[in-house]
Length: 363
Image (cartoon, rainbow, N blue to C red; front, side, top):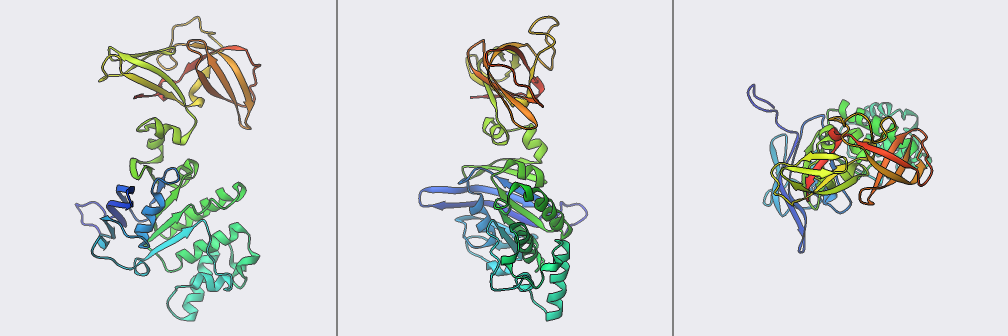
C-alpha cells in the first residue's frame, strides 16, 4: 500500500464533506485521514456535526459534496456510492443493539460468512479476547451493561472490518466500569489493526483513547493534532474551555504589550487599544505564601503577585477549589490546590500565575 518514497495510504480519508439540512449547514468542509491501527477522536459539543459525519462515512446518510476513500479507493462521492454493507466498516453505538432472541454466539456470528465451524472459531477467539468465553451460549438479558458492551465490540470486530466507527459507545456505562472497558476496547482494536473514528463530547475520553483529536465546532474542524498539542496549544479561548474550567483576565494591547495585575504579556501584531483576553486554567494559578506580594522581584515564570479575597472554598476529593474576588477590579478567579485547603471566607491571599501556561488571545 506504500511506495518507498511516498506517504502511507490512509485506511480512511474523507475530503471536504458537507451536509446541510434545509438552511442549516451541519457539516461544513470536513477533511480527515486515519491510518491503520490509529484512533482518531472527533470531539465536540452536542449538535456540532460529529454523528452526521459518522453516518456519511458509514453510508447511512449521503453527503451534499465531498469524497470518502478507504485504502485509497473511492467508496462514495455525490455520484458513485458503495452500499454500507460492502464498505467493511464496523459500527458501535451507545445502544448495544444486541438481538435479545439470539444467543451471544449467534449475536457475534451475525453477518459472518463461512462454515459453521469457522464461525464458531471466530466467535470463540473474540470472546476470549474480551474475557467472556463463559457467555457463549447465554442470552444478552443475563449480562451486565459492561458485558453487553464487550459482546457488541466482539460482534462489530467479527467480520474483520478495516474501519470502526464508534458513536459515544461508553456513555451508557457507569464510571466504575467505563475506564476498564475503554482500555480493553482500545487494546483489542489496536491488536486487530483497525482504524478507529470515535465520536464523543467528553474531553477526558478523547485524551484517554485517541492518538489524534479533531476538535469540531459548528460543523467544522477548528483544530486537529495529538492530545498533548491540542491541550497545550489551543487555537482559541473556546478550545481551552472545552477541556477545563478557565479564568479570563481582560485587558487591552499597548505597544505590543498587554498590562495585567500579574504583569505584562507580549501581544505583537495588535494595534493599540485592541481588546485582549489572557486565559489560564485554575490549576496554573498559584498561592504565593512565601512572598506575600513583597520581597524578591517577580520571576519570568510566575510574574507579579496580585491580591485576592477568598469568596468560597470547597473540597473536591483530590483537590480543593478556592474562589477569589481580586482586589484590582473585583473580578472572580478560581484556583485549584492539591489536597485539603479550605481558607475562611474573607481571607486575603496573594496569587501568581504560571506565565508559561497562559494563553493570550485577541478578542
